[in-house]
Length: 321
Image (cartoon, rainbow, N blue to C red; front, side, top):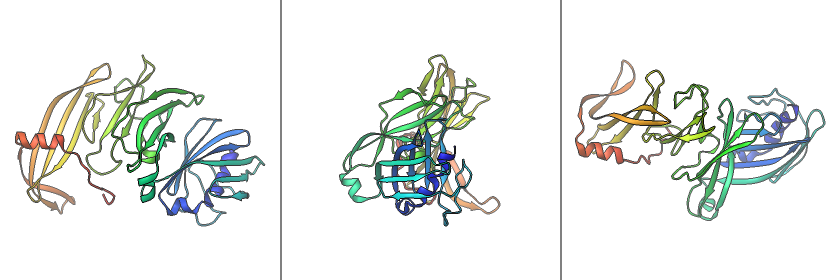
């Protein structure tokens, strides 16, 4: 994989990536192999048509071209012949030519981009992958709106073949290369396959996260969206249950509504809501013994409070969360 190493120095020469909030895509070749690089801030994810494995590199700590590293490859020093914002040209240590062209750029927080820029169906590689599959989200943007995810493309890690395209996704914000989350232990339909993933629809941090959950159905040999509606789900693999946790504001100072929904897995990629608990919690204080905020009093919610919390949409900005 020496041809991948050389791209690290090329990235050093892109100052705007670390200084501005840009999403950029470069595609091209290194030697005879096709490669794709997806940049965001000081981070990049990339893939090639040789081993079809998603790799990542963090360039935030790079200060000297002789000292750079990837999370997947060893440090290397290379020469770059030509660089500009549209094209990257260089050579690897074994002489393979690097030739990459910028195919996409988008700045989410640029006012001009928000008002004027629009695009349709741009594929953006995701960092998280399962043992057998990797993912690209399909992103579109209308003038005056932020970019939205409208689909998901699923590829085989064995040969890079596109095996499924999920369309019709609505109300899903684009969160760069972390829009999809997958881990080895995810098994949302409890079949032991562990190829499952979720798509975050609002944010990747803070309370009240909303996501769509997908499980791989071995019989159909495709991913199926599960009927889980809620926030911040936790899964009990022993009991085959999923629990949604939601916190809602209250008009009363130092008070909140805490809504919990329990779902039981009933087979065939389906869940059934089996219980709900809604608590009105009052008089929050900092417990100095454990450093947590707790409440002095709580009671069962009224029907109006429950309905308010179930319908509440959290639009808060949790950048400092």
